[in-house]
Length: 393
Ligand code: MG
Image (cartoon, rainbow, N blue to C red; front, side, top):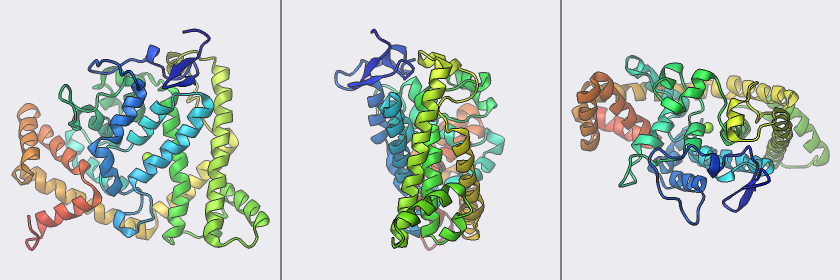
């Protein structure tokens, strides 16, 4: 291979992109495919997984049954993938790997969004805790059952590295090569850095839309946020008669566009300055992620995030739902942990086997896996089945 560029699935990627030549491979070696790149296969495996399909009925911020137009985990993940792919193409990164990580990043999320994960983490306090990022990795490494030859989806190291975006040091120490970067405070590849940032860009913008739709915030409140106000002014000046819905979408569209263009420019500059010539150079580069927003827009984006934290995620109507779902997750956990015989057969078997090996922590992990895999509506139904004598079991 010459000239510093390599072909990946028919496209030319930059030398600092993830490439087959520099890949750390899969946990279980497999023959290469004639028609698909390794990262394309990763992406395809994610799409066909059970956990991906379940994202349809998992909460992003608004519980699924509150309305059909709100983002769910699956539409959120697709928006992340869309934003990340656009940037990946501009930066000549591997688009398939970027998409694979984006679509997989939330596979380990519990029902009821962050409320569910916090509750499960509390339940698991004495048994190693629960981190949704680590759970996403567990889903692709262990939980999915789709292959005769190995557990999980057997994704490439680069995809797994991207999926595990945060990790406590205690857990990192148990993860071998994959955990090493948290201990050494090193960066993952650029595709992973990008999927991580695209996640933030996606939710900061779509939660404006969902927050407005839910009536938790109003355009007048959002005008306190500079990023929003700037684009709102521009749209109002250009289209004074525009109907409110279209106005909002036009503003959000412009916000995303500005942020995306800024990420492309800033990252190009940082990559050039760091002089990285391979994914391992990227991993070793100091001074924070190379995929980033410029300082000015970063500050505005952060202000938007803070606004959403205060006015959307901590709105009393959201908090009521948070409290209810945490209570429900805890009750599910306690009932099933106290008496694992109440678990469906397959999960009860898992719990028994895990307990024989690791004691109570094994039992707790099996129960947590069961609960984490639930969709919102399945969790609600399972709760009724366990607690309401009038419900069929
Ligand atoms: Mg996400």
